[in-house]
Length: 119
Image (cartoon, rainbow, N blue to C red; front, side, top):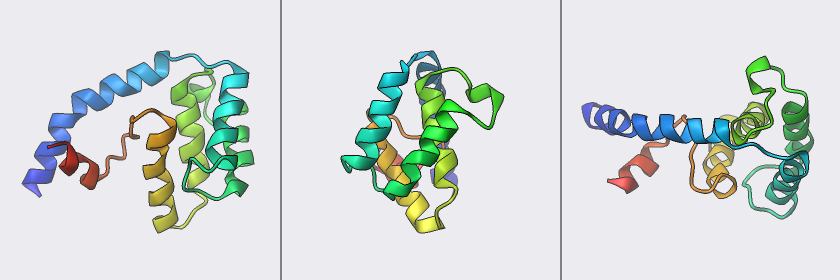
């Protein structure tokens, strides 16, 4: 457990930096729609297509005020909010596949396998 805790602690500054990059990366509405479409319809995401509309809804009408800005951070949160409708294992797969959408940036719910692979 200490080993995993140490890995997470070492990665924490990078995670914060990546989140800040997401927050400062503005998206046009067309770019956001394109990413949502591509991720679900073109099969770049390991998640059911039925969630595309939910991601769209959460991005363009966010349930939380802090996700109102049109940024990568808000879009990533729209995905994770929609994924809450999935059972644990499909949710895990969907979250892990966000890597293909966000250019190698994994959400803060860090996967131990990914951290191990980076060592």
